[in-house]
Image 1 (cartoon, one colour):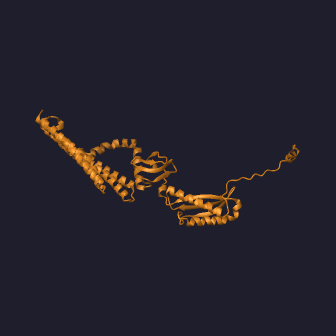
Image 2 (cartoon, one colour):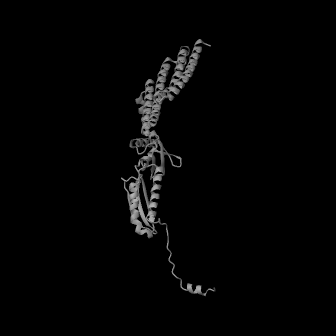
Image 3 (cartoon, helix red, strand yellow):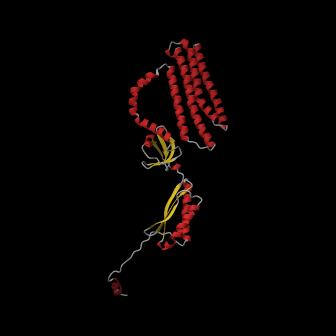
Length: 358
């Protein structure tokens, strides 16, 4: 075996050993960073873990190729190609490191905010991180094209005609992309919001807002993937941003309790105005509403202070029970559907009854 071949194999073997040593070292640093109170060091370790391995392997192969270059006529080992490969390796490593660094900082920022119990818009953070990652990729590609001396203007001119065909074929994809951009700009909802649409069978909690689709987890725990372009043509309701929840009900008392209706209405109104979980500064209505088919109907309309679903039902239950107690305290009863049947006497029925044998 030629000595330069042995040298090339030794260089490649050294690169493998160096990468193994680096992996052990970075794993130890990763454990130390994970045990610290700060999240930013985790992002830096995460960013450099794989790109550095790429740099070690790539550099080892390039050094081995330089050793073999004077002793081979293969075009692949020409010095010009090796210099281009060296520059492209550095660009690829730097771009990959920056790409992963942005992802690491995004994750670290979210974890830091959650650990500090600080409010933040996760959708904004995710979208900004995506924009920066796209900028990193575009910068890396443009730098690589510049190294390869490929004119960007020529590519743009060549892509003009093809871009029209691609644009027509991908108009739905572009519509979804711009739909996602409009969701980010208008912010009708964010990740974690409960949304629904009266125009479509869409209701659930927003799990993720992507470039093409938005993932909504329905209340039966089935995920729904809605194209972003849909949100530009439908009405979206965001109950998560409500300030109060409404209680709007009717209760009926018997016609026999007509004399107590006024005092019952006043007591219910007073109870709601002083209830600790009812927003007295919002619209509050209690009135005798109508003469029903079998009851005197009292309407009450108010808002709870809480917007949480479970807590709302607890307050609603308490209000209904108190109203029932008020009606009982005034000697009334809650009416239930009744029907009075009037039967006229049938001619001859009495005679037939008298003529029956005893």
